[in-house]
Image 1 (cartoon, one colour):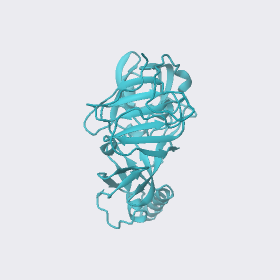
Image 2 (cartoon, one colour):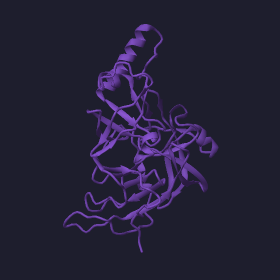
Image 3 (tube, rainbow, N blue to C red):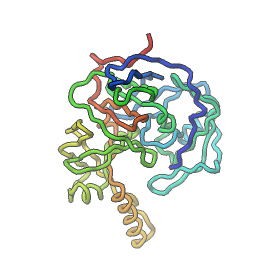
Length: 318
């Protein structure tokens, strides 16, 4: 999926500053809060960010596994956004389906961010319903902190002491892992039942999942059925024991006009999966976590979700 650089259209308009609870030695740069947003969600479904688009109140799905902020065709029509073919814009999904359409958003605003005349691609084949998603092109210039226990989304500036990010209260271990953005998705290394695997942090997916070929050939489970319940999933020092993974059909399964093409497409799909073995952590698991994605230092800091009855507040200006 092609990455679009739209951040120049979002001038910074406000700044909050305050002291972090911990700092690295010989460093006195505290966390600086750019924006704090109260999201909404339905059960274990994705969290929605309140925004204004062309002066109207709308909601965008928080999507850490999306290269660029985008809209569905239904969403564009609902807001009377003109869909146009765009040279140089191309979205591609795992099924090799493509879209090169886009819309122009005349005015976009959310707490701390504002932009005009933004070009947003139109998602493929309806994508994620009749909505829109807020994606990595607007997140990467900041550190993104999200506590799904309270549905709080916070943007921090990246100029702070390395590692001095944990301002919130939590019990148990903190997991720390290097972040790599792979094909427009936040990924981290993990151990699943003692086997090394890459984890995709996908806040737009309701369910955690894994492809069938990965289950059989990487995890060594010959007949997994429809759901896999591993004994443990560890990200750094944080261990999760109640993860359930939906076992998905392999890419290109049952595609093709004849048997020979079906076999060729299926092999290509499995070869791709095996070259990129991974599992997806969706909201059924992420709902229990507090994530601080320090894009400035390419590190994920993760704990159990904050107890909202005794939560530390984010750094703020007096």
